[in-house]
Image 1 (cartoon, helix red, strand yellow):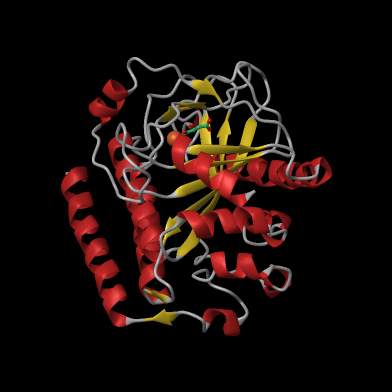
Image 2: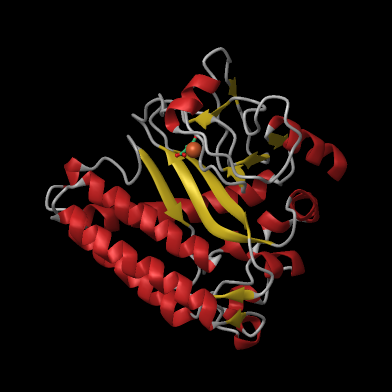
Length: 328
Ligand SMILES: O=C(O)CCC(=O)C(=O)O
Ligand SMILES: [Fe+2]
């Protein structure tokens, strides 16, 4: 089974697993998700004097939302079933970790996105739809096999396609609408060319998105440096949003992603409670090993050292200078 999944994922750049989760579990996820998402939108709108300036936090009527650490979605270990974990172990050429535990929501009024790669670097996104998704409510379009150069064998190598080259590469190709049902999952190479499509209904279309990236085995920056990076990220946002400068907002968000990627975890600001970590299976505990836990013995698995801290610190200081230049 795992060989089949891997061959497909390596060759096509994505794999569609059908009816892998019980619909009852996904329904429970959706109920929890809806509460978090409602709270998120209220918090977001409170940031602005005129909230109608911003329809959402990402692109046109699209949202990204991190899933909180106290959630059943995290404790369920859905992102680290044996099938998914063994597939990841095979495709990553070394250690990996679950860096973003997030979601992508295509909301009513969203439009076709510009055709894009999520990154030039190899990583894997696990998407779990919380509602059925199709051409009506904005299933993602993918261009099979475009994660690699033509005729190239699979490897985890980065590419350096520019935005213009990405468009050029698919100009004679037709996308596939990756229609998915509750209970399904998809795995996608982040280098695969794709785009979000319009949601023409009145309901949000949420996908859980777990992003797995290559990582160190057990070394990472110290918490205090990561926390400093996150506070600078917050400061950038606090200054960018009220003046409505999208260039600054984009700069802040890119910087936030750099801090999180260099930390191998988005779970530092809000540690994972013991009541949740007690329920995680072994695979999930491996995937989340760079997170901050209330349970100190889980934190002690990681060697938080000077050299990785210094590198992160230098990136933070550079970004501060660039932000000041940009804001003028
Ligand atoms: O939510 C989707 O369908 C895709 C969104 C996407 O590709 C993105 O925002 O990068
Ligand atoms: Fe994307």
